[in-house]
Image (cartoon, rainbow, N blue to C red; front, side, top):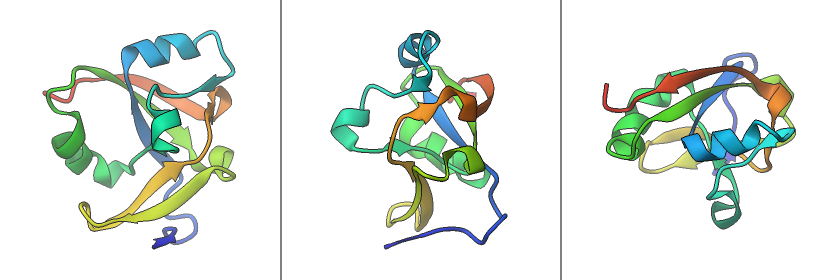
Length: 112
């Protein structure tokens, strides 16, 4: 099942980048995590989904960079897909993230 939130409801989403992948992106015009090729898409979350994503997927895996993504800038690769574990629609990106779509970067420690 796929779909999308109501128009205008979500304007930014978030991706949590491993430090090495983010460092490589600094000399490129796009960001692509290491698991993109094997996964086929890039995981992301809304602000409301961050606590659950942190608990289920990020704890114990080290610090990350929290990338804030402008939904309008990634509209062509952004798909909202149902996740039975989370019981809601999650944003997935079917393509590398243009660096111009990243509006903010902040250190993120899932242990805090």
